[in-house]
Length: 447
Image (tube, rainbow, N blue to C red; front, side, top):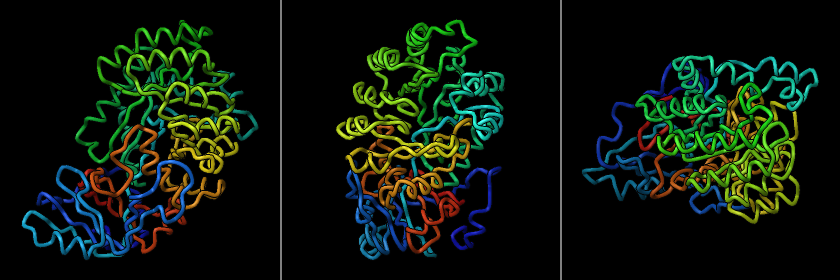
């Protein structure tokens, strides 16, 4: 098994091969898994504000009992759980034979990974001193990806998407949010969301939960019939696109990019109000370059406000006084060469802080959630509990999910085991260390 190989072998790339289910999984109605050197449970950790290392909820020499429906039955010390369950006829035993640390599966709450083409040209222009906004204003940026995505076949889009999903899974991600937004017509946005749902429901994707989000309001495409007329474009989306998404159950979430090159706060308010009235959950691309949209997100009852690199102190306090999750995207800052969002200030003010990769072809091509989180922790002075919480249960909150991100009774058995003796090795290695085994809804996958 993988757990008996060394770390170098564990981290060998398997991008062309899907994760392999273990043939002997869950032979009984419940399974005892352990012992682990440490179990990072987050059992008592609060949802808001700063954390300390004690909030990791570490159980030394721990174990977990899972059921065949994909949920955690109990977490505790291996000795106690073995005494309680080992003699039961309906309880199987999954032995962990090497030193390992068990964590919840990661949740990447903001990505744009359904796309075609490359934006290497944009990247080169940025290295020459051009800003994100300057590139967009000259016809580059998002529209370059829109043209490539529209032109790609369904098969090519799905193949590229699957490769990215595999890369995420190998990094410990078990739930991923994926946005549309590279179609920018009613027909193309429906196509993107339909492709996402096809992948979501595919048996080949049972190792990952996909949460689709409609980002048709990514920008007003300059090649469309509403070019230069943002209100008319948004009204067309509200009238012709959102009702079809609702009827076809393609997405439960709606997003909008509020920025100088996209949509104003006033335009976004009207669009989001319509989406909310239709029953959609809301999220907002907020305060990336220009402040103000974080307060809009709170006022609209959005689940999350994402980016926040340009947020003001007033915006921080507004988020902290709300239930709206502050989702920061360190990959975009690395890709654009700009300062990180003020994650430390957000936590100290009492906000809910999530960390996501923003994997996209333009500003955040890296796509490595754990690496990004570990680098953010250095620059923003986040301790290990705050960093891991941001990609576990607090990231789940950014998607409106409360059934994952912790290792405790009643949660989904989405888990990952790292081949180390000490949990601190995971962030210390800044993404180089990969999990040896990942469980998705109780099913173990060798890596």
